[in-house]
Length: 408
Image 1 (cartoon, rainbow, N blue to C red):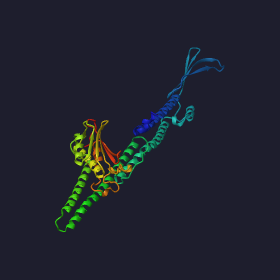
Image 2 (image 1 turned 30 degrees about the vertical axis):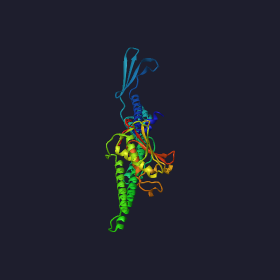
Image 3 (image 1 turned 60 degrees about the vertical axis):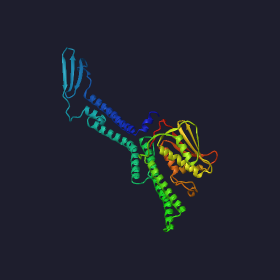
Image 4 (image 1 turned 90 degrees about the vertical axis):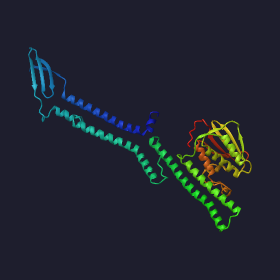
């Protein structure tokens, strides 16, 4: 199994093995056929000398000797007599058209051993057999590449739901899995952008509609202070929405410049933001520094605090601590909490809990921005229950010097 596994995972090794195996079989068969043909020819062309005895009519031995057949020169008998004389008997070579013992031997020999045409026929038949045997193997291996090619063409033509089958464990299977994963990410990204555009259009329309209606109700009169405050609130909401949409777009574009990377004192930053919204800060007393973009980290913490203040019925608490090379920021409130089934969806752009859209403030991008900022800093954020009732949002960031590569 250990030896077979590399071949099952490497397509080029399997193609190489099929071709080399075919060539090896062809070489062995050709060599064997060549050897058999050579042995047959040698037997037919060269014969070992044979002993002969010369007798008279009475059966007395008059002498003995040897007979030798020389290819192309016929047969020669050499006999030494008892008297000391030597006799030589020569038989002329057989004509090409004559039939004799050689013809009978040729008929008894298999046709494919008769050089040169029998050998060539044999070589041709073996080559065809090897080609027919290797072709289905290579064809089966490369057929999945054609399936992958058709899937890529469908995806390139606009069918974002196109996927290819994932079979085997070799390079083609790995490429199919990577293509399917990439296609799924692209499809989700396109769907996210469509949803972002649709939701942004809807959210932008609401404050603009209220401003337009207010101007229509004025009918040329001077606005009252209350009406002016309402217009300013709608303009502020519109400005915040545009700013958050632009920031979300910059965070999605990895190549966009969102600020300088530096060492950030997380305790000092949290103290400033907690003082701004009146939240309680609990820190261990030791320095907690992270590497990142200060304005983005401030924006993430501010969004968590504003979200907690918006829904909390009591104080909001921020807890800072170090944990195994990570800086952990816990923002806890005493609000209604977040159902477990909704704890991932609340980080989607423009998603708000049922009934939350009517609450004052918030456009549904705050938590989505927090997750994007955390991901940009190789961190994470999640929601969990608060022991005293409500919800806790936990932001984890790698401490400075931990070796994490910030993707800002």
